[in-house]
Picture (spheres, rainbow, N blue to C red):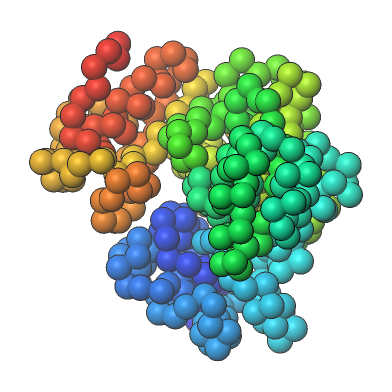
Length: 390
């Protein structure tokens, strides 16, 4: 407990943009958010006064950090599971706990668990040699069981030659692998829910996530042209996963929409890129909700505040813009007075998520092109041609 405020201290492992935006939510709630970061120039340490420098793979660093916190939670899923089990054994409140988090850390563990629950997933198999992929068949998707994100750790294989080229080197490097069916999908969706230790659940509207080169570029909320019964079924699926795994906090269930329904792609047990729209677009943001959940407060309302909300990621341009970020922001606000901008304090690199912009409106047709134009301007310092905007 923070003696200065009388509120609990939440410790977040990881100093990225998710911790940065969680800190902003904590300020409004009067909470003390402490951050364990690897470096002082990560996004969260740039704005948070309560930062401990240490590595998430160092058990002693985790133990010392946890000693000053009432509850431990995460900005990412890369803390070794055995370290978390050691902390729980020592009496540390860890949310989500290691028995839940391992399903977001290890895709093989997750696939086996969801299959056991009878949930819709792609066909899959563990890969310990090239023959496992050849037996599975093509086309297929090869994945690293641990550590992949934003398109990393995923390889599309179309032939035996592809498998024979990729698999031996990955196995030799110690990468645990699985192979999955390449799903014939209409689009990608995401179901964002939250669950408290008490067992209360809450879910936001289903969203469409638009991917380019394995990286999310847009989130459309709510997902356009989605049958209400399909949206409700996906929300119920996500809440079922949260309950079955004992998740505490925010859970993002990434989905493929097919002709027959939805198929579970991946899980994330933390605030998620697909939920950034909730900061301005929902009654309770995913960051506030995550804090409420890990502290076992009653969960907040998740209703959207506008008929259409679009979050567009600001991705580093291939060539550094001539105009600096401050000047780009100045020009953006002159053109889009209603744009909600979140910049993460990251150095700009090609393809890197350096921020996001959110716009709200009456229709997706109006909001979506404006959000895309705003995000492109912030990253490239140039206006896109061919967009009909107001």
